[in-house]
Image 1 (tube, rainbow, N blue to C red):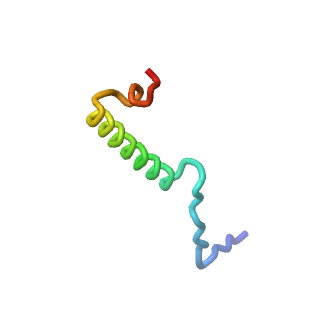
Image 2 (cartoon, rainbow, N blue to C red; image 1 turned 90 degrees about the horizontal axis):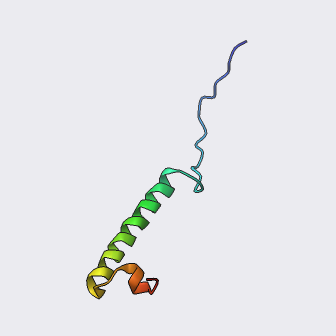
Image 3 (spheres, helix red, strand yellow; image 1 turned 60 degrees about the vertical axis):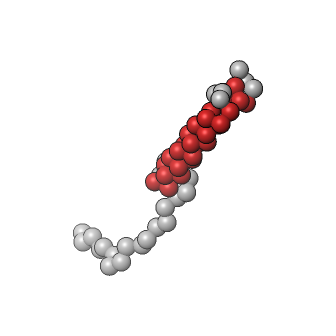
Length: 56
């Protein structure tokens, strides 16, 4: 039996759901932004983020 292979491979779009490169990159950027904001809050207010939020 001969296998027939297509001459052009279809280009499938990558999903924007689940563990993929796009989601991991976005999560990393959000984490870096959150860390910078937390450090800025601690520097300007003189107290930790949880204290600043009134949780401690």
